Length: 310
Image (cartoon, helix red, strand yellow):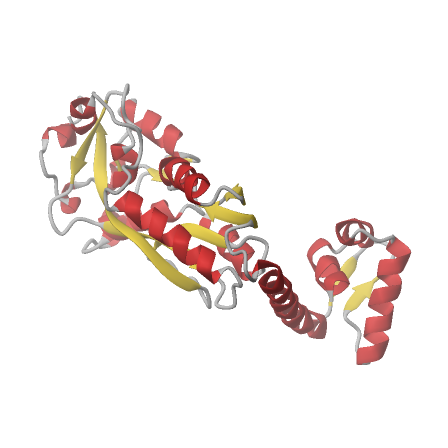
């Protein structure tokens, strides 16, 4: 099954064999034997290309599920009696990782010194896929978002704040309304970032036609987004945790809390329903919640809070 999944993802016998740590002839023989056993063709191949057949695509999905369950089975056996030892892989999206993970990792190291934590920062879709396939154990993402079969473990709910350059008219409003945001001046992160979708949902609500169309200027990261706002190219929304972590300190960008009802996002952990690391998951959730509720502040203490809040 591992050969089947690897070949379906690479569509190349050499790369699939390398991924499975076997020779190309061994992988080819394994695929051929599987096809003979099942009595169906899983791949179409010639000298130039490899294609997955319709039946092959259906069986690949089942194989992925079975491999994930098998991995959970092995991990459960290894984790029995020592939930806070070994290695755990934790993912996080870019609009959360710099602000939550450093403090969370310090708490995890303090409470679970024998645990090795591996990190993966990626966009939401990639992390959800990685958790579902057993490539990583848990991920920290932001809702609303369709997480499929994965289970959700809440951490905190935070508001999105308006950010504008010091000389911008929006910066002079103490509690601006979402409806006051000019969509043509709304700067967004590029496709794939959930903050982009959350910002659009908040600012497009109640608008019609051309009034729903945002600026065509996009940023690939939060630092770039803030720099574009600072340059006066427009305004945007930024997560509250980024502001409280001092992300705007040293810039000429002003952050303003939006008038109620302010747009919000929910920060959660997601994991497979069958994860064998349930006890560890609950402990990580507890530590993350303590950060969000003030038990352990997000980010270092800052003496220039006034400059951040305007």
